[in-house]
Structure formats: C-alpha cells, structure tokens
Length: 183
Ligand SMILES: Nc1nc2c(c(=O)[nH]1)N(C=O)[C@@H](CNc1ccc(C(=O)N[C@@H](CCC(=O)O)C(=O)O)cc1)CN2
Ligand SMILES: Nc1ncnc2c1ncn2[C@@H]1O[C@H](COP(=O)(O)OP(=O)(O)OP(=O)(O)O)[C@@H](O)[C@H]1O
Image (tube, rainbow, N blue to C red; front, top):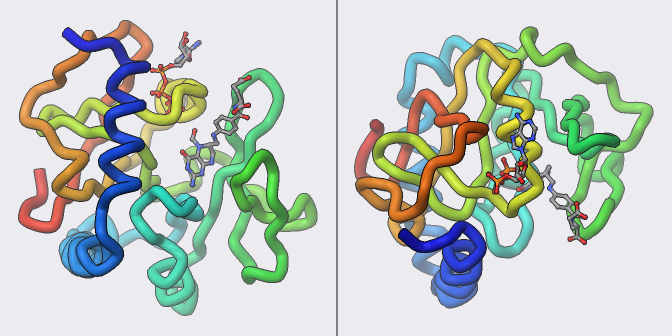
C-alpha cells in the first residue's frame, strides 16, 4: 500500500506531464459520456467544480450547460465545510487560495436540493473511491449528502482497485466516468 500523500505527488506530476492535446481529446470524450447519462439529463441543479490548471478542464462545459441547467460551485467555509453557490458568470468569481469561487452575493443552495454533484480528485478507482487534494472537504460533504454523485477521470487518473488504504471517512462516489467507460 502506498500512502495518500505519495499518491498525490505522483498524480500531480502525471497531470503536469499530460500534453494539452491529450487533455482536450480525453475531456471531449468524458463530457460526451457524461451528457449521455440519465442522471445528467434529468438533473436541474448540478454542482460542478471550476477547474485549476491541473484538473479536467471544466470551464467550457460549465458555460455550455449553464444555458439549460443551474450550475453551482464549491466555496470553502470554516471547519473544512463546503458550501455551494450559483455560477452566474466568470465576472462574479473571486480567487481564494488559488481556486476561483463565486462571490458571496451569489445565491447558495441546500446540499440536498442538488440533483447531482461532480466531485474533483487526483485518482479514482473502478470501485469509485478517490483521493483529492487532502482537505477532506468532499468526504465531509458526501457524508451528509444523499443525492447522486459522479467523478470524471482522465485515463491517467484511473486504477481498477485502490492502491491505497481506504479510511473509515472515505466516501465513494456513485458513478465514475472515463473517456472509454461509465462505471
Ligand atoms: N477546482 C477545485 N475546486 C475545489 C476543490 C478542488 O479539488 N478543485 N476542492 C476540493 O476539496 C475544494 C477546495 N480545496 C482546498 C484544499 C486546500 C486548501 C488550502 O488552502 N490548503 C492549505 C493547507 C491545508 C490546511 O491548512 O487546511 C494550503 O494549501 O495552504 C484550499 C482549498 C473546493 N474547490
Ligand atoms: N467526515 C469527516 N469528518 C471529519 N473529518 C474528516 C471527514 N472526512 C475526512 N476527514 C478528514 O479530512 C482529512 C483529509 O482526508 P483525505 O486525505 O481522505 O482527503 P481527500 O479525499 O484527498 O480530500 P477531499 O475529500 O477534500 O477531496 C483527513 O485527515 C480526515 O481526518
């Protein structure tokens, strides 16, 4: 078993080395698969994440679906809590510790009014476990969230079985989408 910290370092360097054209090709396939799912099609209120350089690029997709879905984005709050605020436009975002978040005047939503949440991460298993950046924000959030959750994974972020020890607080997502498959 490798520890989570070592896995984060390995995954960050893998993502840094992923060529731009490969990122675009895989992202196109992933979002096409996602749009084909029943849960995406039926969802009215969707929580996405606003990608950083390293992550699956989500900005274009968010701007596209915003015309027919309500999109919410995470905002970090005290005690490692996440709240979700509506994505209004790129002009109503502000940077907090390197991550863009909707400004405080953007409407919030109660977690269980979200139909679907897309959970970010660095590595994902076929069994739907994940490792994120280490804040425990999403594990805490998923512990009290009842609706659908999905993760979107580059091939380089996918493993069949976790190579790390699953902790009692780790919460799997309900669905995992790669360029080739939906699990
Ligand atoms: N695009 C995107 N947005 C996201 C996440 C993500 O993984 N991706 N998050 C996924 O969770 C949340 C933000 N995660 C964060 C994780 C760490 C720190 C942070 O400031 N960490 C400190 C050290 C940790 C600490 O002291 O608690 C630091 O880096 O200095 C901030 C936000 C919500 N938004
Ligand atoms: N439900 C919870 N209640 C209290 N603490 C928690 C909970 N879930 C996770 N944590 C704490 O959060 C810390 C980070 O967890 P972990 O290393 O699994 O992060 P991660 O999965 O990479 O982060 P994230 O979920 O934000 O993507 C751990 O030290 C753990 O103690």
